[in-house]
Image (tube, rainbow, N blue to C red; front, top):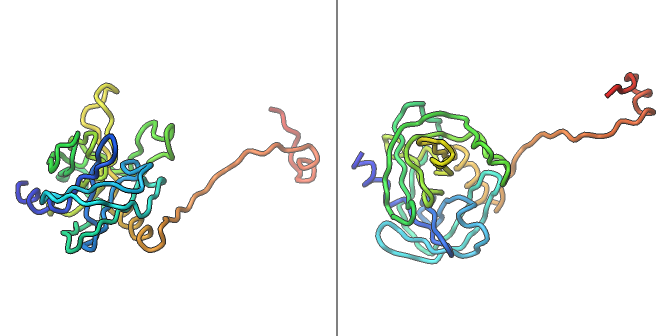
Length: 222
C-alpha cells in the first residue's frame, strides 16, 4: 500500500474555495483537474494545491450537476495525470482513498469495495438523485470529495462523492462515482463544455370523458 500512495499522491490535489476545501484528480498533463461539481459550486475561480507544495489559480471550465463532476483548468503543464480504470471493480477488492479530508492534504485511507450500483439514500431531496455509485468502507470525510479512489494497481476506479455520517447510524458507508462515468463526462465537458444525458419520464394528465370514450377506455372509477 505505501507504493500505491507514493505513485498516486502526485496526481491528487486540494481544491480550495472560500470557506472550505475539496479534492481533485489531475485529469490531463496540460492542466485539467477533475473534481466534484458541489466542491466548486458558485465559484468561477479556485485555488489548486499540488502535492509538491505549489499552489496555483484555477478556472472552473465546465460543470455537470447531474453527475456532480467538474473540470478546473490551471496554467501548469507536464502534470502527473492519473490513470483511470473504467472497468467496474470487484466487490471485496482493495480500495484506497486519497484526498484532503478536513484540509489534511495527501491523506490516505483504505478499505474494500463494499458494493456496486448504489444510490445515496435521500440524495434526491437536495439535488438530482445520485445513482450507480461504488460503495466502499474506506473512510471518506468532508474534504475528500472529488479525490481519488484507486485499486491495488494505483489506477483510479472512482471519484470520491459522499459518505453517510455516523449520526445517521452508519458505519463506514462511503460512495464514489465510477471511473467510467467520470471519464465519459470529463471527455464531454472537455470537448463541448457540457454533458448529454438520456432520460425517460412520465407526466400525469387529466383524462376527459370525451378522450376516454374516443379511445374505447371505460369511465374512470377512481
